Length: 341
Ligand code: TYM
Image (tube, rainbow, N blue to C red):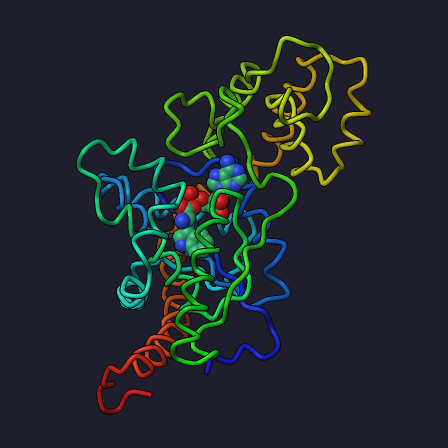
């Protein structure tokens, strides 16, 4: 049976520590996690094992992992309420991932849009991990009997694959083998777009750095990037993703930060110019990120404290994860070592 969290829902999510986290990661994921953490049992990981599906410099990976972890806490994830840990410190992720590899089909993995995009960029030597990566993500989710997975729009397909595999194994081994998770996608900022190419999502690995706001950009850099943001040749400020992707993106960013409705925002800009919209958005983002940046830097100076948080969280996560691994091992016919359970 699944681990007991009382009547609380289990929520789990993660971010890859590749390059620097973006405003997309913050508005599409972390900011929502903070809102969800009080009413649920939460697990928020830094998924370093996912990051190595593309080549990483070891010291940069370590630095990005610390940075992501510190950003979670600085943004308001509370280690007393949520488990905050690094994926590679909980070996059960890799264990369950192998099992899922044996129950997923090559056809369904081939349909993953992110695989198609990333493999197209990887040249002729495509790491196998890039192909099987959604199964590591499925393992992340299923290990903790997660009910809800708060992610941006781009990860929805992976959560749906997780559901398919969980249902497949439940029908083979019993309906309580896995909790079947649901994606949780916020209505606003589920897809923050690139500032230079507003038809593509803002990404950590954007070719043109001016398209992405990174969480450690300086106020000046943020202002400059918004000033240069791509809009369109008209002048009217309205929300229309098809015709006005750039303007709509700026409005969405404002709505995600302020909690205002798009309608209210649009009404406020009647008779104003794109320049006003750009500068206002920049000012809001700078104001939102400033305390987060300050706290992140403080936390990074105190790795002892970060390590204490990690140790406590990783132990709790491991205890839950181990229960799941043993349940699955037993159901599929592996012999558990004596003394287990
Ligand atoms: P990753 O690291 O690419 O992104 C982390 C989170 O940020 C969201 N996100 C965005 N949201 C809105 N607009 C954007 N431009 C934007 N860019 C990224 C993503 O949707 C995601 O929620 N495979 C995952 C990480 C992962 C995971 C998990 C997530 C691994 N295991 C288990 C949930 C549960 C990934 O690569 O996300």
